Image 1 (cartoon, rainbow, N blue to C red):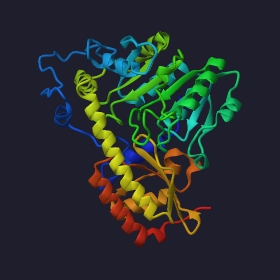
Image 2 (cartoon, helix red, strand yellow):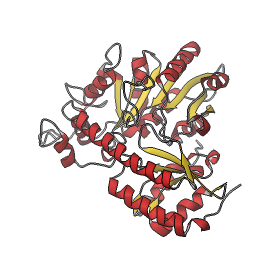
Image 3 (cartoon, rainbow, N blue to C red):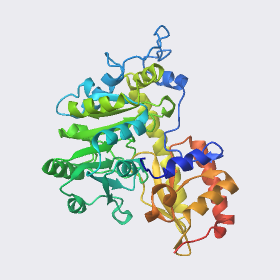
Image 4 (cartoon, one colour):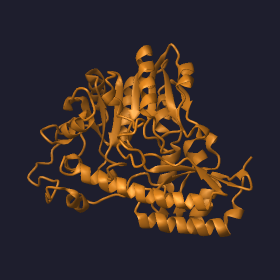
Length: 403
């Protein structure tokens, strides 16, 4: 029987998110409706659906005709690349969570060694462990602004290392891996013949760095490394979590075919309705307006959150996020870090404000940390922070601290 650790962050979200008054733990951009999506479309199409389409399984790997889902994704990944990505090199899945699982299940087994960027989404290191692989954590550190040390990576590589996993932009910190570091990572992977899985689910929500900046990170698919693999979804940067649509993309047709073969045992196809909505959203006439809306929302809300952390600097500290939707904030009192789980539980009970506790959701290294998802509706963020402010004034003294 396969043994897998409880998925901390997903179990926390499942327990509390439907009853929280102010859910600022959610990591998606504020969700939109089909009606909202149509309003963003420059061609003002009235619907993403073809009402005459028979609702069979549809294209098993995802629609691919002109301006359909796989073609649109291939076009987006080809923008900064030296050669276009073929639509055939994209495989559609039920969200990025299925994409990650499918890729890991396909590539990793007993005797393999996996190196995983940390902190990150637990799936990326717990699933390889459950499959019998040895996993080493490549730790980003707050004192280095959550940046990774390539020299440290060199020391982690072993003779049986097969896969390097990175998360760019990063959940929970909102940090990026800069272009220069990505180039070093690719060179090192090529030297040791490693696969690279880049979970790019928060791409391209770059709200605090310009594409003209020398550190701006390209998608790893644009870096001409054949063993690079990307996963993504419509949930985070595209505000469409409800359609449950994700993907695997790679320059390696062999990887895609292997994943497709494994996928036969888990998924026949993604819903045709979901595929049509995702295709519509990623069409050239819609995608730029959609991302523009989400980046503006992220900028607005990040400014509000930054003002809050500045005002309450005696009890909380952070490295301001550069991209994505999440912030990792450390709370303390009288020089001691607070018990983050008790803090989150008491805060939720007293005010209805929901955060994710660092130790429960990201590991024991993160005592006192909470993860916040700040790209919700602005009113939810403002009201939630106002409730948090009252809690810090009246109830914070009752939150236990830890050694």
